[in-house]
Length: 485
Image 1 (spheres, helix red, strand yellow):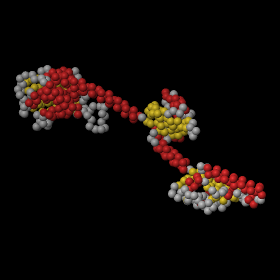
Image 2 (cartoon, one colour):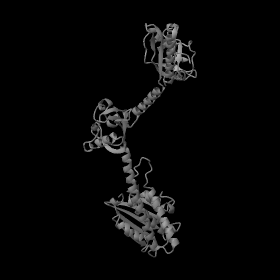
Image 3 (tube, one colour):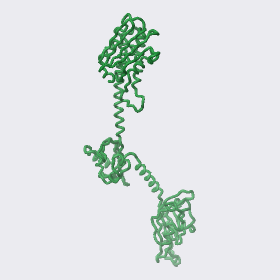
Image 4 (cartoon, one colour):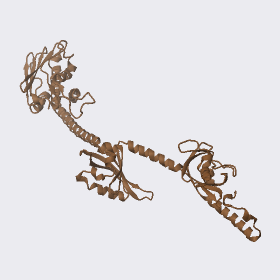
């Protein structure tokens, strides 16, 4: 290894004669070797130059930073291939911090520059060049230490990215010290709580806490001091305008370099919409449970009532299937067609629409010309359980007509008349052109049982059947206010 000539300030001692001179020379050489070993062991880049700036020594850390091993005694001021200022402008070697220190004969410490290796890699560094002088004050050279800033630059870049993420986050992100004083406040916090950063920083975080929840903050700070996290704590906070808002709060300790907890970071998320959605979901689940139970009850009733008049299992299965199909078609009329409709409220249909849907399998339409059913009179909205009741009744009227009455022969037809009379609504079903009626066909069957179970009790009305020789006539009268309940 080349000796450190900058520490050999005079050659006169080498000319001394006798044992004293030889001993001094050996001591100086030994001292130079010790200094070289020390500098070589340093983790930071260190190199020396003579008074003119030619490099006389560099350690392995310097060679690693530069990416080259400059030739001693020839390379000047710095061993890097190229140099730049921090803003990217080229930095001539003759103007680098070491060259300035030698020119001005004073330390030029802490200047930042960038060294480029031959492979194009750039290393930001701080330079600490210090001139060296002999006993009489003559400049003999300089020593420089280069501190690699790569890790700091990476950390700064990461910190800038994190800061940008925090500032642009829609969640409220703030920091406080262990006394509860707010020390940072992002844009999301401004939007959530209504305070600007200038209004919030320096204030107590308790200004966000409702009076009935002030005991929460000491508990949270106590957990933070113990180094614990608070994850997804759902609570209520107060905005600047005094309104309350439901939030999910996550709190984490902030530690210094020694690992001591010095504060806390908070992330607050508005959960108002989530709570509203949960409440709607619970409501829908309860309503679904209610509807499913009602559906099973209705299906059970249909089976029980159908069993009274069915003579065989096949007849029972067919009757139940047809009646449930009629209910399905009627129910389809009450389902909202638009995605904007409120799914929690059953939509109303009209009685004329329901009649047309239930009779469709038995007629060619309700246009009054080619139809086997003629419909006239007042129309009225119908919804809720009334849809189910009317659907089953109309289905029974139609199936009985298909079995025994007007729909059982090609020339038969049905006239349906609707009339409003004060608080009552009356539907009259009149069959004509069918086979002669010589007996009561429904008896105590499904239709009669259904009339007793629903028309009187549920709809507040009555049903009257008149078996005339020219055809069956049915008069159904119900309370008008029950049709949309």
